[in-house]
Length: 203
Ligand code: GTP
Ligand code: MG
Image (cartoon, rainbow, N blue to C red; front, side, top):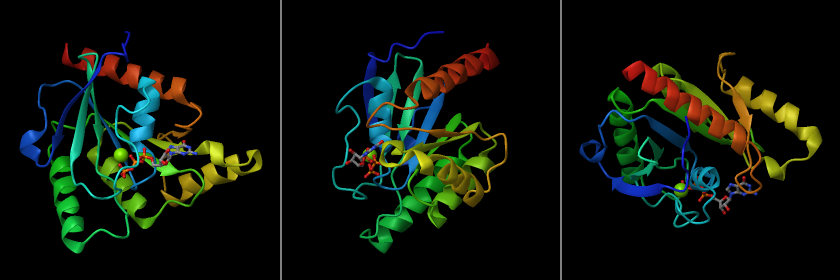
């Protein structure tokens, strides 16, 4: 199983469930707070500088961005949450879209929850984590911005993340740095393994 990460294309920005592709290809979701680095992690996986757009107008769009990689897998950049300056209306729209997206079991096949490795996960992170666990689909927590930590903080912070999210032992927490590339090989391995399993399951 190989994945040509050079062959990546933007498919569409889905504003509603009707715009989400349903062609039985695996869909790997990248979820997390606004500014945690969802787009940066996607760019790092693909070794591209500005493929998924980084840092523009945080929390301003409630859209699900679909990228197709090598005709084999979708990377799904979910809208960020927790941005303070978002209106009540926008927040409600986000909630409704996410609720519908998780309710449609033909979409998500692997969940990636990105958290900021420097901080204790927020209440919103815990809610998102529970949605992924409830989905029954495979799930990995990616602890991003690892480069911002001192070595002595790595283990305690990982433990705090695991404890706060009340993760089952089966859910891995992967230290990652979109900035430096830490964890890229491991995450790519998880992605490849997932594509292989999905293919076998559908054969
Ligand atoms: P929204 O799309 O607004 O929800 O944000 P996002 O989660 O896609 O975050 P984005 O990738 O735009 O990154 C936000 C900011 O964090 C940018 O300034 C990035 O350069 C920075 N950033 C992302 N990942 C890392 C990392 O691993 N280390 C460091 N130091 N900075 C990072
Ligand atoms: Mg983004």
